[in-house]
Image (cartoon, rainbow, N blue to C red; front, side, top):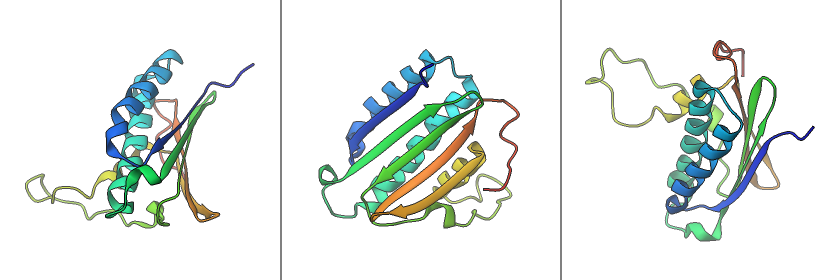
Length: 150
């Protein structure tokens, strides 16, 4: 039996994300991934890739850098691996933002990694050969998002 897998390498540029988004959506739809898991997988990929590009590139040209995305669909979860050659940065070390009493009280931005944590059952980072490797797991079960330790 073949394990459904999606793999793609893109330049570290925001311009290529819409095509990546469409391809990933088509892959998840083709595999009959439940709506909640489909949404969470898309959110996780988009947040981490956009953050890597926006915060990792600085003034450098994105076409010189690559981001590799691999998604493996299992029986119970979606395994996501994002690898890049941008400056080393551990997104799992970023503290959760403080809770706010209202939306009017909350600053704009700074919530993406909290959303990633909420959408995943595992969220790990490591450096290998000077590359960032982030591995995540999104549950296919609607109740699977109850967090075990990461």
